[in-house]
Image (cartoon, rainbow, N blue to C red; front, side, top):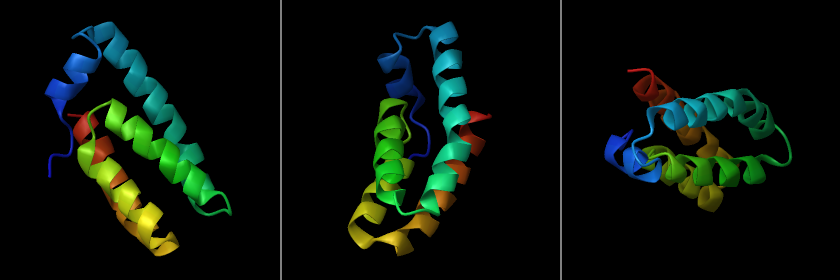
Length: 93
């Protein structure tokens, strides 16, 4: 599965590079909070929020991992962490 769908991200932002930088900065800024939330009781809310964010910026593999964790339970968080790391690496390229 595609880690980062740049075409989808370009479409969502009308190709506006400044907007893209802002959106990605906001996304990266939320990562630490999501990771803390994954360890707590409200991990499902964090995963659900991350899923929506991932879909919105063209990270389908991460969104799929989040959906799988919602279904599987806390044991699915390892897959979310793995895909989150891959997504962040792809966004840095």
